[in-house]
Image 1: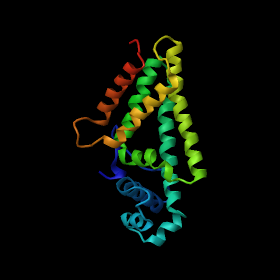
Image 2: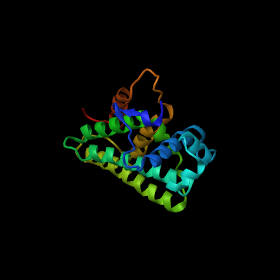
Image 3: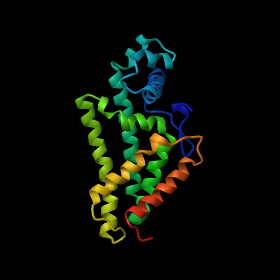
Length: 208
């Protein structure tokens, strides 16, 4: 399955925020190349070839290979934050919101696994300024989940002694799905999301 066809709950990944079409094609090609070969082993020629374009055409839209990675990482982290923020701010108990956050986050990492692998595991390839920007987004992601856990503890719904450590464990569990999920496996992204939501609720000692 190509990056353009990856789904989360059946939704297509349009990369609609990337224009014009040539820039979008190059970005999709970069995601596939980075996921397959790693950032450092991928050349601009590899990316242009996958996009059916000349190497010179790439530089019309992206000054460097790092600029491509930065754009991919920014869009991916913005989406991850949107998913968690939506769940965190919905009506309902902390238990309901945490289950929604985890299942949605896991579905995205399973359904968009190629993109998610690049977004989550190529951070160190970014330069200092771009890396600092993405780390700031990661702190916001952490804060959304930590806030739900804190709400659950305060309401007596969760039994958690170390909120910070538990938040890290929850996010690590969800993110790792991108590394092992197989579209030809026995579970759908929705099923994995439901499984992980149940596991996380058990982790925090949710009183259902």
